[in-house]
Amino acid sequence: MRTAQRIANLPPYLFAEIDRKKAIKVAQGIDVISLGIGDPDQPTPERIVSVAQSAVADPKNHQYPSYIGAKHYRDACSKWMKRRFDVEVDADTEVLALIGSKEGIAHIFLAFVDPGDVTLVPGCGYPVYHTGGIMCGGESYFMPMTEENGFLADFESTPADVLARAKMMFLSYPNNPTSAVANEEYFDRAIAFAKEHDLLIVHDNAYSEIGMDGYHAPSFLERPGAKDVAIELFSCSKAYNMTGWRVAFAAGNTEAINALGTVKSNIDSGIFTAVQDAGIEAFLGEQEAELAALNALYQRRRDLVLNALGKIGIQVPMMPKATIYVWAKVPDGYTSASFAEMVLEKANVIVAAGSAYGPSGEGYIRISLTTPDDRLEAAIARIEQFL
Ligand SMILES: *Cc1c(COP(=O)(O)O)cnc(C)c1O
Image 1 (cartoon, rainbow, N blue to C red):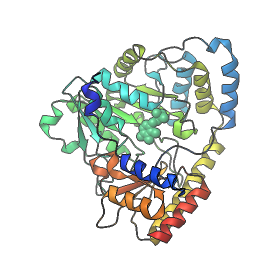
Image 2: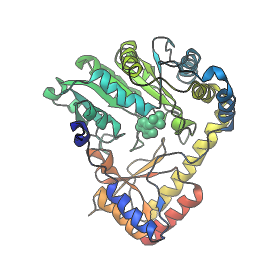
Image 3: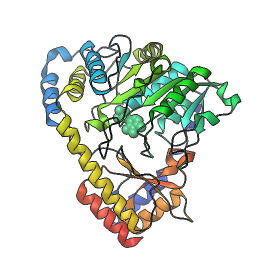
Image 4: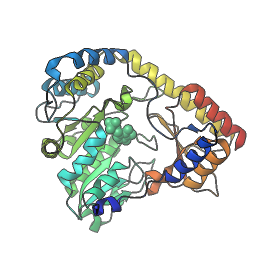
């Protein structure tokens, strides 16, 4: 049996060493607390679960779903974009249902990237921006993200020979893993840059609803001309604690939406229609108080973590205003990986090494706020005690 070269071309799994050490500790009966994974611990709101329960029982949902998403789901996505951001997207030509945004990220490469093509990828970001390209024989160019540039990916410094081969650029704000947010001026520069160099921008807005201290993230599509060059991805996963349900959508440029839809219609057969009904309830149901409570929870956990890190002298470059992560600098003398290994060794706590998210992540760790309060407090106490 001979597997394809694309499998061998994938980067090594960067958490492998941590996973191995964790397994040894767990086998010894040691209680290891993970602050590594960004997967909301709170349940999906009851209003959404109950809509899904009746939808599952309805025989009209038992046949193949629509490839592009049910008309009523696409209408709901369009209505939410209008209500939430005052952005108009046509439900028939500018919206496409996705089986989670990860699915859309992986498949957009098949629609835009031929072997040898370059994708401009954030210097640290969601790993599929890079691995999706590798699977298509493409190459990634990592745009520098630094504390000095506010972790806003620096596309303007891309060398001309790289740009000549580039077709697509990923951006994502509020950002995983750095928690950075972007302003209008940055988005406008990105749009001008994409027009000049004939690039598709994919703006991954997975954390659009997760804001702290009153911050509400904008949509990339609010900016003039955005639809000429961009699609934006939104998901129920983080906003409504629905990572297990697999429901999201892409909106924006018709040509890109069509191309992605063509790829998908040859690969998958859409989202279970009952889950789309749950997505409609998620986006359009009464949610103000629910989101306020969720964001207050993350804000409280963020402050707990920031306070503890301050006590042990670990610096946080920017106060997170959004997402579910705290991005912290490793102390002098450590790499991301060696510090994460030391925290596991001494405190039995797992944190994510920043380098796992790309070259700009070296020198940082990511702490996730999705651990239940008592476990998070226990982890913090251990870190304070042992470091
Ligand atoms: C969690 C996450 C995703 C994946 O979201 P799904 O809709 O669950 O596939 C995509 N992008 C970023 C930046 C994320 O953090």
